[in-house]
Each structure stands twice: as C-alpha cells, then as structure tokens.
Length: 591
Image 1 (tube, rainbow, N blue to C red):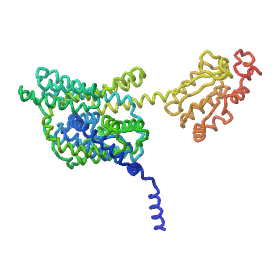
Image 2: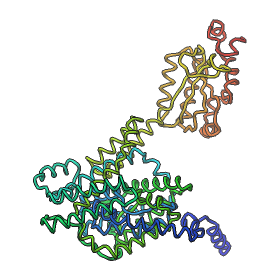
Image 3: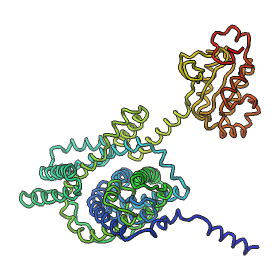
Image 4: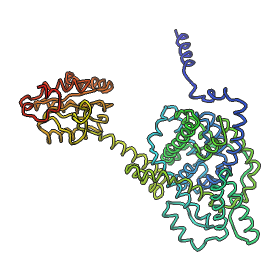
C-alpha cells in the first residue's frame, strides 16, 4: 500500500505542468542560426547602451559607479532565462535607483560599505517578495497600480534626479540629501561657489546630448555626449587648470561575490521600502513586457515575469548588483535592433562583461559634471508631458491621483509616494464601485416597439417604477442603493410596485441580497411588491446561496420585460388605472 501511494504521488508530480518554472524550454528548441545572428547584433547595441546608463543610474542610487554595471550583468541573464518576454531587458533603472537612494540615504552614507550592504540586502528582499508573489500566481497585482500613479511617480522622480545633480552640474560642494525644498535651499546657500569649468562641461554635454537625440536619433546620444564632455573637461583641466571632479577609475573586473545582511534589524528597517520597490519594479517590468509583446505579436505571463524578476534580484544580491527591473530604454533598443529571442539579453550581459574589462580604466576621465548633464537629459525624458496633459484633461479623479503621487514624491519620501498613489487609486475605485449607477426606465412611444428609455421626459406609470442598477450589490454599495430606495419611496409613495431590471448586476453578496429582501418586505407591507427582471445566472446562484429567493418569492422573478409587465399589471390597483391618463403599457390600453 505504501509503495503504491509513493508511486502514485511520483506519477502525479510527473503529470504536473512545470513549464512555468522553465519557460526557456518553450523557445530555446526553436532558435535558428538566423535568430542567433540577429540576437548578437542586438546584444552588441544593448551592451554599448548600458555602459553609460549603468554608471549614471548607480550615481543616482548613491552606489559606486561599477555597481550599475554589475546590475546589468548576472541579473539580466537570470531575468531573460526565467522570464516570459522575448525582448525585456532587466538591469538598473532610473526609478528604482531613485527609490533606493531615498530609502537608504537616511540609514547610511551613500557610497559607503554600509550603504552598499544595505542596498544588497534590499535587493535580496525585493527578489524574495517578487518570487513569492510569482509562486502565489499574483501576477494581476500590478493591475492595481494605476497608470496615473506610474506617470506621477516618474515625473516626481525626474524632478528629484535633476535636483540631486545640481551640485555636480555647477561644481558645488553641498549636501544633496533630503527633499526638493531642502536641496534647493542648500543650492541657494552655495550659489556663489559655482565652478565655471564644471558648469561649462555640464552645459555642453547636455547640449550635445539634446542635439544628438534630436538630429541623429540612431546614434547613442549618451555615449557621444559623455565623450564630448570628457574631452572638454580634459582640455579645460590641462589648459586652464579648472578643477573638475571625475568619477574615477572603475575596477576592470567581473562582479565580485557579495552577500546581503539578513539581520532582523535590517529586515525591519528595509521592509517598507522593499515592498514599495517591489510594487513599482514589477509594474515597470510587466508593463514594458506587455508593451513589447503587443508589438511583437505574442503574450507574456505576468506570474512568470514575477518569478524571473525575483530570481534575478536574488542572484544580483550575491553578485554585487543592486535592484534590477525591466528597463524601457534598453528593452526598446533591444526590440528596435532586431532581437528575436531572450538570447539577445543574455548575450548583451556577457558582452558588457567583456567591455567592462577593456574600458573600465578610462572611466577616470569621466567628469561628474558630464554625468550631471546626461542625468538632466534623462530626467527631462522621464517626464511624459503628453500623457500628463491627457490625464489633466480627461479625468479629475486620475488628476488627483497624479497630483498626490507627484507632490508626495518631491516633498515626502519616494516609497511613500507609491503607497499614497496606490492607496488613493484604490479609494477612488472603491468609491466608484460603491455608487452603482441607478437609472429610471419607462416605455418611450417615440422609439420602435416602445422600447424602454431613461429620458427624463418619458411618462412614468403612477403605480409602477422600473429601475436598472449598473453595478454589483455588495457591502460597499448597499448604502447607496438603500438611500436611493428610501428617496424613491418618499418622493413617489404612490409607486408601490418596483421592477428591478437586473441584467446590469453581476454580483451580489449576503448584505446585498438582504437589501433586496428588505426592500421587498417594505413594499409588500405597503400593499405593493418588488420584482426582478433579466436575472443573470451568477446573480441567481448567489441569491439562491444566501437564501434570498425564499424571502423575495420566486414568483416575482421574470426573464423578460414583456412577461414582467403582463404579470405585474395584474397586481396593480385597477381603480387607479381607470382614471390614469398615461396608458404607457399595452395592457393599459387593452384594459
């Protein structure tokens, strides 16, 4: 018996679908030599693009510059191997870098060993949260972060990025920690200390970047701008003796092994930030993956992306990489360069390792002012002015979400901005669903076959009111529905009969069912009744489950308006019908 049970269990495990843990088995056998060649070309472009971006994003995150490059190596390989997108490229991003800096700068000095250790710990925690959400099949979770939250947060992060680079752009020694008003106050206090050489380098770098992006879009504008800025800084330092600070030489080495610090104190300190980073990173990755999948004619699995992103960050925490997620810039470049499979992302990571070994020493010529110019351009490009304008003109609710998220980002903590935006989105959603639309209907003689209309000038029957509820009846919406019923009884006491067209009701819970029962009892006590028309199967089953049909009398349920009118007419007070001049039903004319 025991052996049979073990054998049955083993057979059951073999029969399970484990493809969601090994997505590469679905595409790897179909890779052709032409695909490999196309992926290699795309990978070379991607590896060149990530070089300046990695250094720039590490600067934003308060990490040593090389960590931005490390985050684009092992994490990118793992995310591509275990993710479901063919084109998504993972690595360091602007938003994740800003959130990380905001979360950790108050706990340790940016760039210090303690700061790096906290960043690795946060990365591990984010990876674990992402992985657990993926295993729990919670891919739909990102749908609760509205687009307005993402737009508002990104715009707020862009403003902070530019503000934090003011000291490098103008060559000022100042404290760039804190919120926007703190940074601007520090900048005004040191305004007379502006370094003309550094400012010139930053301004020229910014101008070259804008020009390349506008007139030569196929050329990597970051690389060209950084080269021009570096040459200009070298010339100013040699000929004029301008003291322009540089990034310093990067280690020409592969990512060293590292380890997060999983003490209870660190976990407690970083838990809120880890949750905020997880939500935003997953939203960023899944949104980009879906966008590219739509362009490429395939679908992605949100749960699988959670798993891929989780494994990539867990691995990154042991290979000196800080929080990585889907990068829109590099993913778009990867797609436009002709990538066909996830091998492009994997090849790009290995090519980046080779490039780092070759060019890392030359980073000592990279001025911080040039990096500031690049980051000014990055910040400007992050602000989606077109989408902000669209939100402002389209919806007051979404405008509120956008504003709360944006101002929370620039005046409060960034991770709080995400929570505030998500919370407000959920509150507005609940407010909307708690007030289902209730429409009065009546036959309109101006329409074919006297179809029902909600026009306010259509005559109503003195004894019978038709209503349609568009929305679910649950504990959050019953108060709104009950108030409408009470107002209807008070304003039209002669309409003792109420017919509820229920094809707009998708769901009813116990409290919603009790609301219908109570209204039925009240109207019956007043000599009238309540009737349900066009009841959906789901609503029928829910009403049956909560025992509401027994209290409402199943004979008062109709599946068509014609049958309902015929049945309800028999219950109307004929003495009132005799003196009625409305005559809106066929039965009225026949009677």
